[in-house]
Image (tube, rainbow, N blue to C red; front, side):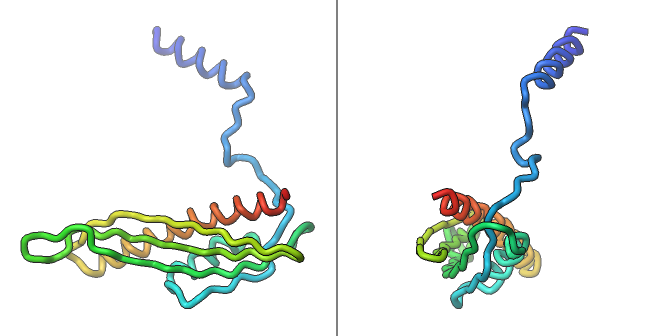
Amino acid sequence: MKKILVLSFVFLILQNCGYVPMYSLDRKVDFFIESISFDDGDKDLSEFIELNLNNYFQYNEGDNFNVYTKIDYQKNSLSKDSKGETDEYELTAYVSFVITNENTTKEFLANESFKMINFSDEFEEQEYEISIKKNMARSLVSKLIMQLSKFNAN
């Protein structure tokens, strides 16, 4: 009975305090990406970045940006077992975004890293690595959009 009263009290307080989940708002952006080009970096990562930017290629009123992207993706061995086989990898993506507007050019550097264990099944490991690349791309795109919003505000 006491738990029910506490939960209902918390519920009533949250209903009246103006709490709104951060990503629930439909925020309209006042910029769009006119074009994006990639260096000869990792093909999967560049494809995932471009897919995540699809919504920003649609023409909106406001500033338009051209983005040049250079990707350096590395898969390094972190630890090895007694046989010399890798137990754990570190996946790291270093991305340089060069953002150009009508009169201004700005360079923005971002990186993401993830530790991954070695799988006994090669196919399963490749699929997991692709999943990690998708998540990295999503995070890198959100950092880029944040920079474009700042760029647009100035």
